[in-house]
Image (cartoon, rainbow, N blue to C red; front, top):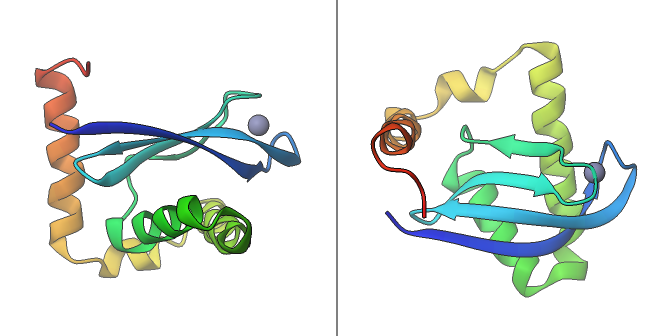
Length: 113
Ligand SMILES: [Zn+2]
């Protein structure tokens, strides 16, 4: 299992300002984004590589330009959760489900180092 952590500045809805976030990738898929100021976990385990992976990669290489785009995606994600309308999740290919299940399984079997 390949784990990578990257630090970048993103907007935190809880802090209501830009703050340092730690982005954790597992096997190239974003697993978690944590606000280092308040500890809020912005996203956790249920992200698609296609949606968030690309956005964060681009945000990390071009932070200023891409920041708004990723923030919008995060806000949309939170909104969907709040509204309990996981329409995109339902229509996602099963591959995503298997990726998430795979990570969960790995977490139980092997502690992350
Ligand atoms: Zn925060």
